[in-house]
Image (cartoon, rainbow, N blue to C red; front, side, top):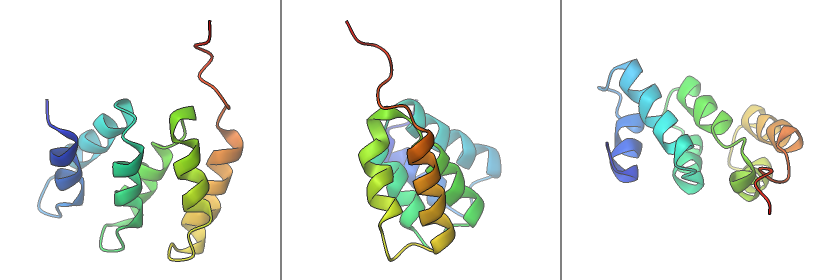
Length: 99
């Protein structure tokens, strides 16, 4: 299994194949690596499909604050900010794993 750092490198590496990039983003999502997914979303050199996939990976309660920051990030394209706001509205406030 790759480390979070390696997964970010794979996701950002244009020479990696699509399956490897998708898998790396999925691994970051599974591990709730919110800041690392946001790093991919913010990288303007990455193809939109990977930025959008990383953004979708943030739609979990532990990443709500990251989604909120992205929805307000003036440096992001409006389409990504709007999608972050939509995901934030759709994300439950908790994972339901309470006592």
